[in-house]
Length: 303
Image 1 (tube, rainbow, N blue to C red):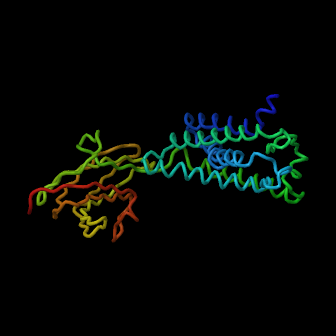
Image 2 (image 1 turned 90 degrees about the vertical axis):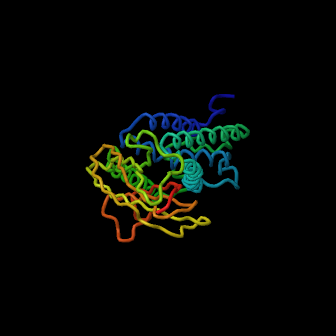
């Protein structure tokens, strides 16, 4: 059995792209490279591998196999579903970032290719769903079941998509604009708060927030501190107990000290901070805040 009979060219190409693309995305920072590789890496490769694994036979000989146009649509849909299946648990675990997403999608793609190779090897070469087999530019419309007008429309649509990605990708800049806020255990800001915060009812206690500015401009932050009473999972009372402002230079980090008197006691109290990069609205809340921090608190003493 020849190498061509063992491995179809389309599967080799997808597997190679998954491995090389993952490596480049993990070590390269320029935005143009990220967009050029990221779009097919997320929206094409995983779905193609899954569809190839599910439907190993070519529609030319298997009436139950989806046609090439349907396979293309399933590739896009499958990629979106895979991305959601990967992103949801990563977000739940708090590790939704570039490295785990790239590794997870690359792994799914390679595993899908492996299953597709195994299933195709059980079929004769001429029955395998490899769209690159004996494919020429002239034979492409016939392979896809397209007329001449449809072929031209498909080419124009593909060019429009590439142009849109090329035009919008670089305009995002080499880095996005964002801010970071973290509750920390002291003015040094080295260690984040992991457990409940101890507050004295009737006495102001100091709570520290580390703010990092990645907005690409000097930014003035308004921080609202609120104490909430939570009963059976429902917030029954909210009081604003502190409001602070601080200006942070671009790329700089500061630790903001806030004085908090809970003005209430109980076992199910929660401290919430709403962080705004602009003036807060009249009715502030998580829906309008740029960042939201929450931490359970314990109170002692009484006013």
